[in-house]
Amino acid sequence: MSVKISVVIPSFNSEDFILETLYSIQKQTFKHFEVLIVDDYSTDESVKLIQDFCVHDNRFKLLRNVRKKGVSGAANTAILQAQGKYILRCDADDIAFPERFERLFEFMENSSVVDLAGSFMQTFGREERIWNAPVSSDEILASMIFFNPIFQPTIIAKRHFFNANLYDENIKTAEDFELWERKSTRSKFQNIPEVLVKYRLYSHSTSSIYSTETILNSFEINLRAFEKLNIGLNEREKKIYFEVINGRTNYSKLSLVLWLSKILFLLLRSSSGVSFFRKKLIIHKVVEILKS
Image 1 (cartoon, rainbow, N blue to C red):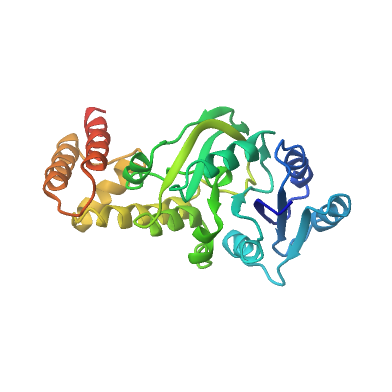
Image 2: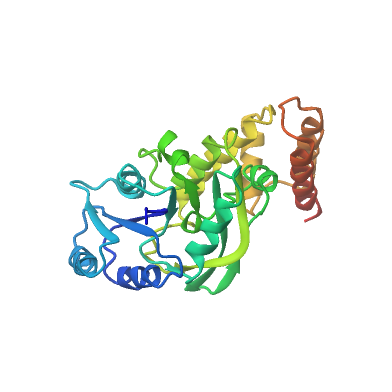
């Protein structure tokens, strides 16, 4: 049976949790996969643990970077060697529910127009709750001016989606959001409204989602998505925008109302080619901010 899914796992000093992650993959109800674990120049015992694991299951393969490339570079190393019809991402410290691969494979096989799909996820460790996400492609695209609407540890994509555009190795955080936004005008996204991944939150999690660097990088991508609406912002308005989407502001209520009202007006007049439904979703979000 040919490989249907190539699982890409960047790994750096992951000795504490990598085996738990690999066992969760081994227990998948869907069996036709390969796992490409890329060691990104680790200094702990994770390489030995992975090597020993691979000996007992030939679907698991260890690749090693000769220098540290970061998450983007490690992921690209695996993507370039992947043999599967689909690429599936997994962090080295997360846990996949047993039916994750089966549900994602079935969805992609039955949704030929979708290039990349994610799902909801359940956090554990420092915080335990369900993280939901926008579901439809229009909702996802509309959300990009406010936040990253696709959780990278949950995604599966057609291999050509990645082959055409790899991760930008110059970006060390929010590299996933950068790729989604870069491909947003030429790709179809969707999130499955099911929890298929347990996402570990602790002080050394792979994804530093709350770091200053991630917040700043994400805002640059928010701006890129915003510019596609053909709405110009001056520097003061960019500062208001940054504070609004990050849930804090030093500006007066009147300043916020005037700025958001301007956005609504310009959005309605915009000839950017954005669908009416997507504009409607953005307007709904802006109105929610105004109410708050």
